[in-house]
Image (cartoon, rainbow, N blue to C red):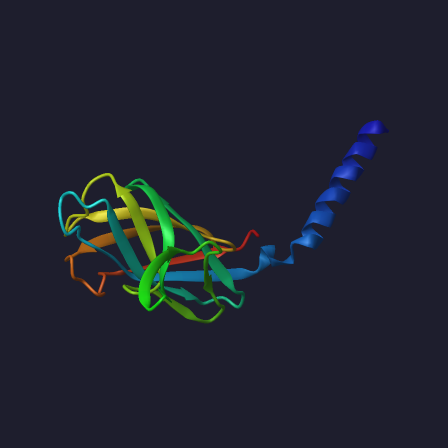
Amino acid sequence: MKSFTTLFAAVAALISLAAVNPAAAHDHTIMIDAPFARASASPMAKAGGAFMTITNNGDMDDVLIDARGDAAARIELHTHVMKDGAMTMMRVEDGIPVPAGETVMLQPGGYHVMFMGLKAPLVEGETVHITLVFDKAGEIAVDIPVLDVGAMGGGKGQQKHQMNMSN
């Protein structure tokens, strides 16, 4: 009888969790397009940036909350803002919103992935591997081609990621 009561309590707990998380069965699609990083200007460079287009083809807003990888001591989400008449780069603490049905550009002068404490220079023709972390879509692995130091876009290829939301 005691095991039946324990089983009943466990089933009831699972049912209540399912009711709290109605988005779990909803399909959510994030697409990463044209990723690129700029080659390091010198072999001594300790910072670099990565850029891309992020499209949310789902019907629920999402947020890019983190970026991870081994290319640098720290990888952060950054943007540029005007402060006291000068353009200043700053960390995006609350993530980068990616509204449902919209595209967000990570581009020079705007939102971007910042590599701080590069372990090696970013070399044109090589690839940097990172993982983007979204609030709802979860983790998405991205291979980022390194382009010329002055590149403004045009990363080669397209990466698509579809995921059933679990949050």
